View (cartoon, rainbow, N blue to C red):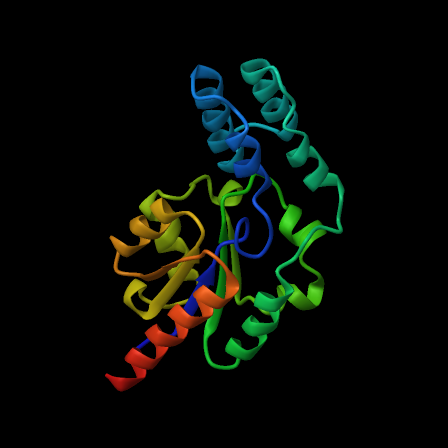
Length: 194
């Protein structure tokens, strides 16, 4: 029986500036190093300054969208999804699981009321583990007091969905709101038939 739904942030609740920035880089050692630095930052191993400087040195470009995101509180929110989460909240535990290197989601992105929609927020930098490492999904489920098989995980990165699936989570690879809602409702309907 499904008891919890866990959402990703970037690419689901808002745009994914980092992926957009990466898509502008040519394949090669600079892009590879930028990805490594992003993983280190998300895991809380380096500071934002070290991250930005390292990406600049590796690629010759500043990841300006990331810097802007950290300083501009009014960013594009998926309000349609947040409204839908409000309807799910009375029926399910709701979690947020994000690879992020700062407390930006709490401090700048989600209002206090929006944060109340989530029973738990798991940020990679706070626990030192990033998706797709199995431990981060296990922590997210444990903190909601549910088993993976009782949980739907929603992320725009298919690799992260496959990792969660391997642990027993039901998953949805997010493309857009209507596709996600349709898939989630199909999972929930099949679950209620059992």
